[in-house]
Image: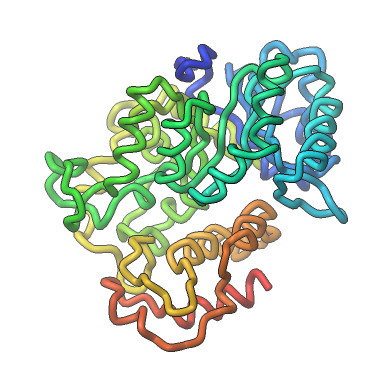
Length: 383
């Protein structure tokens, strides 16, 4: 296992990390086996955003006696209310939820205290400028958390966090589908600085990576496989499938990235993803695959480019489509609707059910996505 310094936290974390959300419905025995094998492989960082008491207890018990081996990302603002996950900035609820994760992990501190899921610049300002932000800073000051992190999918919010000085690291969604506009066939310019032109990296995401690197803000990665979409040629926006090793290598080649947090449902998943460490350069080569892919994604697939905006009803269509895709690919395989994705969808200011069917968005979509139909599908899926 290779290790990288997680920015100014100073922590040396494994390139392959452990995102634990898929263990929410796993047995205690399964969790223990996966944690034990991950430890043997040298994995030393895990993320626990989940507020479900059962999964927190299973994970905490699994590392009991080996706590010093693990760096834990514990989230501040992920609470359990009425037997379901809720995101909150209410300080009293945050205190109860954070005390709970400390107790269930049999510890008095979290290595990384995560400002939980802020995607809106306005929410970042409100949260960090108010009592919630004071609570987070107090936790660090008293040593209950070693460093402050934040989870976000929005590069603009990520840049605000970097500039604020309050945050030491970020948990950010990274994969080529999120990072790029339609892929260039010219491998030499695949990651060139094209501004708002087509076939380029999204400028806000590229700027975030550069700012984080310059400010020594380390990144851990979520959504590396895009909810498995990038592993399926029919779902991939590039019209070709990438392998797990290629997706992992893509994320690890972004500036400031230290660890890719992957979800393991089974020992087989764990072994497959950890095999990245022994993969050849040819097996890791994502660039050749993307360069040889069709110039534009398969018609009808959303690439979250945002050309459909603005929506007359105020819907963030790209975000709705992203959450829908992440959820639908799991549901189509017979798994439960992911609670985190459901929570993120419900946290949107305006959800898909607000669609008035005006159709103004569809002519603006370069990939002929049936947007009105997709809004109806998202409404049925998420409720």
